[in-house]
Image (tube, rainbow, N blue to C red; front, side, top):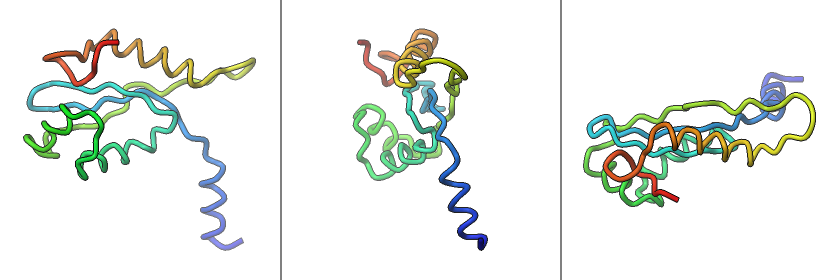
Length: 116
């Protein structure tokens, strides 16, 4: 098998990691807390902001106002999957996100999330 085929196979075998992330405005301290079943998709969030297509209009506005250099995207916690028995990743991820929303309270002047 050549190196290219080997790398393709390795990529296919890597399981995506789910987790909770934040996008933080380092000037104002405001954050957006979110979750994803594939943390590799965080580059897509940055791209949405760069292209001006982010659904969160307040975050998009401040991205444009303060510039990309004023924001950090970081993983807050990776979802640990159970080794045995039934495991609902979506449900577990939702609970993990709720934990971080409760901890950081990213609402109003503190963040870009909306209270549920």
